[in-house]
Length: 458
Image (cartoon, rainbow, N blue to C red):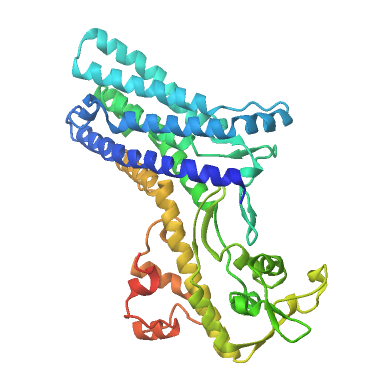
């Protein structure tokens, strides 16, 4: 992958997680205030965190500023050069997002002061604050340019096995949908707008929170963003049936050698391995470091693990290998037999069972890495806010796709059993299978436990 992608992963990964932790602190406060108002009580007590010198509302905006500043430091000149190539395009800058979020936060503090020290002047101030804050929060819904940035090839995740996993471009071919700053700024702005609503008179609260379509509009925007992030997930593919046959032996350095004229064996260096691997079926998986996991294509964020080589080595029990992974000449790609070695399947049924188990375990590990990525991106935090808003508006929460219970939340045993027919070759939805039979079919030799078999002690 590119150096720029690695830089963004390094510098913005933890910053984004920190900001999402603050989001997690804000949501219970907002939820409690909504419940208080819906029960005819004052929201002041629940929102008392605004009195504290450091509170999650101010922390979040500070953390968003850090992300914005780092993005500007890393991307500003590159984005400027790319933008100059695309005439006629006006880019909404990250600074504008922060201006709106900051404006609404100031309004929330003023609204809190007005509610805490009621007077006619303060009441009038609150009315003026509301108009400005409402205009700012609506920008996140009404202006689609807030959710776009210049597309930069250098931010795309790429490795020699997967190739570039790029996000879909906008119709102009220059912009791409982006949530790196705007989602956090939007949540911050929306939370502070809710503070203003909850501290206003009951009529205003009913009109803007409990009735009408305003909050539904924000629910839909958050939900659409959540699904868009989730649909951008791209699993690192596993080697296919044929590739794995060669790869099983390509994991062993002892198979990389040449026989010299005097009959002695000359084992190849790691640099020579790297030169040959691209010409071995599946060899690029080793060259990339046996990656297994999930990539989020819009930001190029990823969470990967190295697939356990001990599981791959078991496949040699069903195969035979002759020759070595070495070829002479300047162009190994012209060699008919891939990189000089020859693999023969000696037990077709055994290899097929092994390969099906490998695919199953690879899929489960991919889901596990996806759940870690989703945690880092705060997808559960966003869903919690949607749930709070739906509860306040007294509407059902939207439906989540099946991928949510693979990539974000650990599936329940019932959900997992529903996924099994698509994961295990030959298993039908109507089949009755005991836990022991399932363990045997997966080649599982440890303590028979669904958690141990499916979640790798997650």
